[in-house]
Image (cartoon, rainbow, N blue to C red; front, side, top):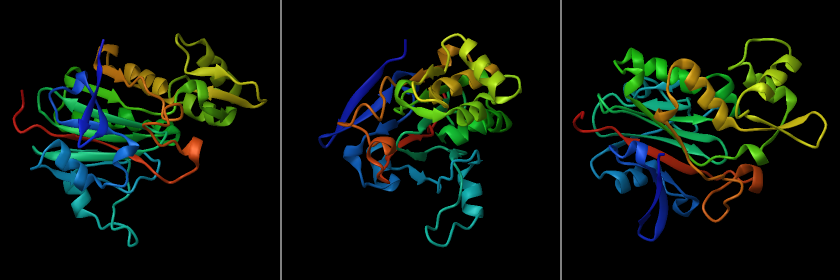
Length: 261
């Protein structure tokens, strides 16, 4: 089993995963708010450069060069997208989340990394498998990838409409009508769906859907780790938009290696 470890930086807690032990990385807590990715990169590696995007709940994954080639939105100066993948050593890639899933990926052969923001919309649009395909284009082999999904809202407390569940479910089950998709999801082993007492509602485990997408893509369960923390149920460490309705986030980042293994 992959283990998760708490670390301390100047009295502030952050989380790492044994699956990504070869890389400087961290799933940071609300205690680091409102520090920027530039500041947080110094916690991981003083010589790395930081890259982030203006997240839009989509499935666009960009490289630092692609970010530099685009001009950002006028108000924020940031390019739109929900995933960043490194091209060279010492590139720190970052995503922000408050209930959505932060996904950090490393390639044990090339040393390259990626950081993805996978909320329900991005998951419905298969952002994680899409990033796998992009990494493959850049020379990664699927067997060499290691994927850690950080703290996010857990299925048992994440109530969504049946429509939303079906939209996400269409990414992993053969297409049918809404009812067929929901039925197919319930029949999956370790189903990502749980019943909800409210009519027209279900509970949805978004991280589990991402795992199922990855397994369909050819990634094995041993290559994936899921943090045993729910942002909604762990208020002492994590912001939760669903709990607080505040536009605050925690950052997750990983630094590409200086030399491949």
